[in-house]
Structures are given as structure tokens and as C-alpha cells.
Length: 258
Length: 164
Image (cartoon, rainbow over all chains, first blue to last red):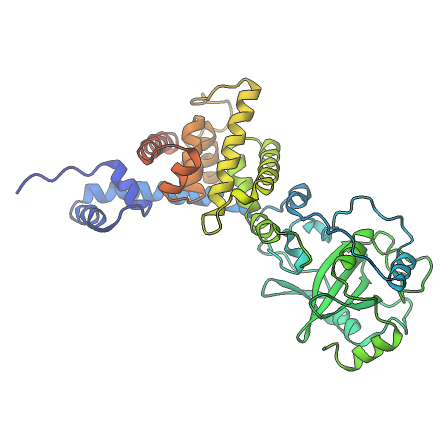
């Protein structure tokens, strides 16, 4: 039998890297199985691979800085032509000048600022391991949904019957371009937008609201200020004017299903 | 509908940000440089979004943009392709230990000492897990060059990381 070509380190590396195919893989694997010295060399390669993998694995869990999230964020769409009623509603709710260049606000809670992928705009979250959703929300199949008091308020409160001092304040409701009921709300220093998905309220956006809660009724309340970024997002999604009190009541009675 | 055409691409790039940052850090050896590089690459990628072929590997495309941007940056800084970094004071890299955290530090330091070319192949193949063919494409080199560069890098790392 002809002396087989010696197995090189590069071949062992390629085997360890999963880069060998078919007959060459079989040949090298058979040689390793037959030769303890080769097996030891292969084990060395595999050990280095696993040390390298382990040494860099944790870096993936680091929170992504906001400036990088903003780099991937889409520019807001041009504001659609809006009705006078909707314009009045947004102006009264905001009382901030229209921001010339609005970037959507980013989720901030506790030390998890900017850990969230840009998918927050459509309710998808890439959640780093071990971090819990804030109170009143839960992660479900990669989506942030409202739970507990936030969910209860979204489902059962109308803006027409505000509860001052309540943990969750509802602002205005509307129907989005996908045909879903959506509601804006404030809770715990955040202001947000949630839309009805089946039996859940899927959070589309949650932003810092430095003016705090203390807003109710949304449409007619003076002195309330929803973040411009939230309103810009509403403007992108809204289909028609915000719901008036009667329409809201009707939506509630229908379980916010359309 | 409501979003511009690049929206799905933006989502996919967003999901890759942690890996891009990790690659950037190995490439540049500096956290701020790494994030600057990622930001630049993301902006370039979005500007050139029509050049990306759906179905091809998005991570490879982004790594390539980063690699090329970094080469440009090195040239702008007047740095030439750096070779092996001599041992610095402080932690000896020849530490072999069962403590995985200390081992991780030693491994990362060893990788940082590699020359630019070797560091890039280690980052792409052994850290980011790219197949040889993809990694060669990112660097614009033949596969044979990649594998020999990779082999030399691993030999160097084995030497640095073996117990004294």
C-alpha cells in the first residue's frame, strides 16, 4: 500500500472548522481515529476553537448604544395630509412646536437604555439575555405586550372618563392603517403606543416622557405634553381622525376588535 | 405602506449590531473606534442598499464594508499594516487556567497582539463563524491565502496561550 500523505495541521483545522466535505472529510476523520497522535493534535485545535468562542461570546450581550440604533432607524415618513380635527387633537395634546427633524424616541427603562433593537418601532424586540421587561409589560414571542394594570387600563378605560392619579393614563385612540385599534398612554414616566393584536395589546413604541404622567383625556386637556416622537409615530400610522368619545366607548364594548 | 423600502433591511442590520460591534472591536482594538466604524458601515450599507443581494449573507456584506472602511481609515491615519505586537507590561498572555474569565482575558489579549491580517481572519472565521469562502470574500483574498493566514494565526495563538 502506498504511504498515505501525512495529515497536515491545516487539514485538522479545516476538519475542526467543519470545512471538509465528502471523501476528504472521511479520509482525515479515519486517519484521526486510527492515530492517537493525530487525535491529540485535533483536540488541540478544537480546544483553541472553543477558547476563542468562549472568550468573545459575552460581547454579544452588551447593550447597543443609542447612536447605533439611531443609525439604523428609518427616517420618519412625510406627514400625511391630516384633517382639522386630528390636527387639533395632536396640537392640544402636544403643545410643543413641531420638531423639524423627529427621530423616534427609544425605549429607556432603568439600566436597559438602548438595549433594544430598532424593531421597537413595529413591536419586535431583540432582548439581551436576563433582562426583564419593565413593570406592566412582558415579552411574548419577541413582542412587547402590556400586562397587569397597563393591560387592564388599555382594555377597560376610556379617555372620556379619566382617573386622575391612576397609574396608567389613557390619551387618544385611533385606527391604524393596518385596521387595528391603537391607543396612546402614559405610565411610570413613559409614554407609549399600543395596538390591539388578538387578545393582547402589542406595544409599538415606548418613550421617555419627562413631563411625567398627569395627562388624561388627551384630546382636550391643556397642559398635557406627549413626546413629539410619539406623536410623529402616531401620525405615520393613523388612518382617519382619532376616535371621539362615542367611538371609543363602542370600541371598548367590542373588546377593541374590528 | 408606511415605511420606506429599506425597512426590512434596517431591521436585519439592527439585529446584527452586536456582532458588528464585536467584529469592529477585534479589528480596531478600541471600543470607540469600533462603534464609529459600525456607524459608518451602517450608513454606507443603507446608502448602498440596492447593492446588497437578498439571499446572500448580510453579515458578510457588512463585515466587508467595515473591513474596507477600516483599511481606508488606517491609511488616512498613516498607519501601515501592523504586524505582531510586542509583549506589553502587565498580564502575561501565557496564562493557561481553568478560570474561564481569566482565560477569556488572556485569549482576547493574545488575539489583540496578532498582526492586522491574522487578526482579521481569526475574527471572521473563529469568532464570527464565517465559512472560509465567505471570509475570503469579505477580505477579497483567495481561499488558499485565507487558510494559510488562518493556520499561521492559530499557531501564533497556540504559542501565546500555552502554559509557561
